[in-house]
Length: 211
View (cartoon, helix red, strand yellow):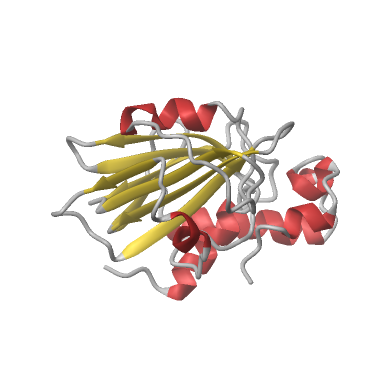
């Protein structure tokens, strides 16, 4: 089922500047599990959770594509480096857990795929899977120009906390929105977090923003 624009936007807010920790493809269940450390706040004015890791499970996957290269993200002449689906986790982890940013990750107008679709590092197609939705993620080397773009087509989303409890998408999105609202309001609970707080200039933090 196609995810609504409103839901996609809310999930994007909750994932913005989240640290991308890992991702694996389970071909037996045909799901992709993605792990993030997110920016979130509870609704009772208490501090951030002690363990903000969240697992996002994409179900009924129809396609996985990736472009890994030893180059800056906008170097379209770079050679791609092949890797297997079984190496997805180690490839993501090799970046050391970098943030994703840009606000829009689901069903966005991403032009990068058109640039790389004919020379992919990883390409998995599942004929019985769904192409209704697409999530776009990336990792960018913190001390080098190494870059990974990752696209996953899927049907549904399940979200779990660090101990495996299911989180409703509405609650997941609300936690992220509370964090960003608190940050803009100068709430001390958000001090020292996020790309802006970490000292990356606004030009760099905007360069992957959708046009």
